[in-house]
Length: 77
Image 1 (cartoon, rainbow, N blue to C red):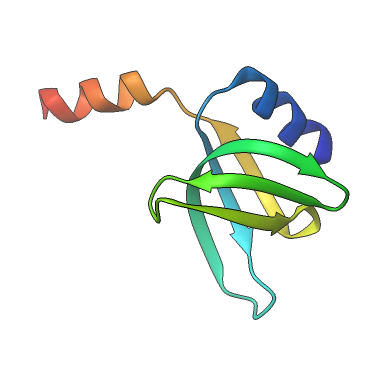
Image 2 (spheres, rainbow, N blue to C red; image 1 turned 90 degrees about the vertical axis):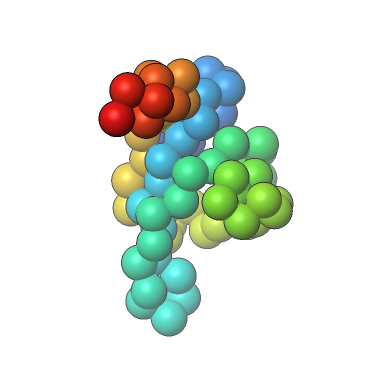
C-alpha cells in the first residue's frame, strides 16, 4: 500500500481512499495526499476541509479519481 500511496501522491491527483480506524469503523475519503512519513500518510481531507494523518496499515484501498470527469457528470445529471 505504501508504494501505491507514494505513486498517487506523486501524480498529484485527488485520491479516493478506503480506511478503517482504530475502532474498526470504515470510511471512504477523498483526499489530496501530501506526504508519506514513516508508517503514516498525511493528506488533506476534501470532505472535512482539514489535514489528516492516517496509518498506512489501516488504508485498505486507494485509487486516484478524475475530479474534472466527476464534476462534468454531475453537471450533466
